[in-house]
Image (cartoon, rainbow, N blue to C red; front, side, top):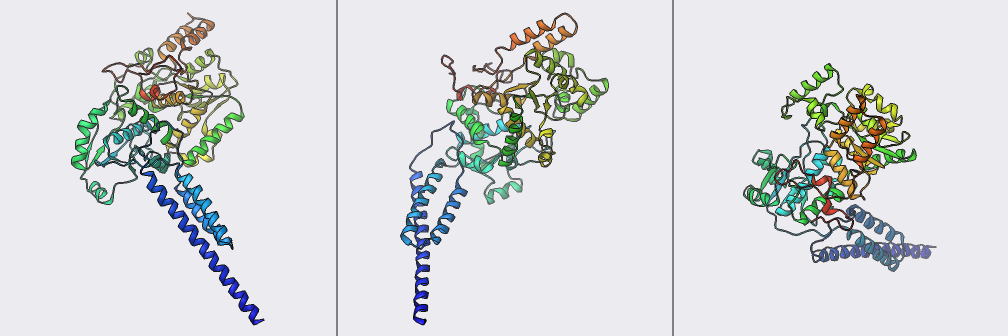
Length: 508
């Protein structure tokens, strides 16, 4: 019995030795593969893709593969079998790591900090511009700071809205991006030793090379405190335009939580048939800012005026509402919008998803629209419990609207603000999805004629259809107006350099 026990003990000891040997050999194989992969990636050169499908972040996946490899090796009593399994796992880890583009190696000229201003989509476009500028100045970009002091007072950080790790890793073949400054430089900023300035609006890349880069080299850190419309729409090299698109369409991905909620909203809508997203910009801040009070009571008009004077950064104070409306510079009212939808033969059974904040005047102003289209819905009514964590975070709510807007059968903005323009451009990129670009100046003229009895409904409907047959988001070139960048077509509304254009439509 004793001899048998000794033999059994020796057998168990031999088995343990084999298991530990299997673990050790697996670990060595995995680390050798990593070393070889890292060494070879530096020889691959700069990755040339500009508009590839979104890349997969795999560091965590690789770690999980390595852990799983050790556990499976320990479970095997055969060292040879464990080594073979380790080889297979190393190969799969190498394939996963290869999904990341190789890092671009360049001499760092300094660090660029940026503070975005405005709402979500104004900041989105600005982030694309700042990444592009950092790339062509050969500097390190610090993850942009989002606006927390605007009208919406949203405290969200970049990481609360966008997948920050994916953003950094997917662009590493273009530019180095850090979540924060190195400790020594961070201390300098905390002590106030940093140069801060707003760049000139609508500048071309030579401005940044000749004016901004010398400042970065001199101070090592430069803070740009305004980022809206700081890069020109036109006259830029093709590679710059394509990088702006790549950041917008591939690198800027919302957080998994926002993406999941967005998918759920879309799934609910899809189960109930076709849906139209109506970007109804009839909110209090928009009406106060624009000075548009058509259809408002005297008390409401006074309230909006008081609000406009309360915000010093809204420069225009004295506004003629009627003149502005007649020039097509006001968002359509819910009543006018209902007439347009009916004139365009939008089926009354379609769901109308309102992508907007609280409508000024509430149900009273929405009555005409909900009467004509009973299936008016909002994210708050579709997922009331899930959105409780998003309350008072306007940018996160706007991100949900963005996702739903991209997926809609038809997208109709009633005003050409930043969301309207950026979503328009993104839907073009997704295959020129139907986007109705309303001619507000013509529409208010037609509405007034119909209401005063000088035009029949049939004539009104026909005129609306005819005038918008060429305003459905089809392929076209941007309109360029030299020396008037505010009046020309916005790059992000129609980034034609990045789109698959039909034959015969030149983008040069």
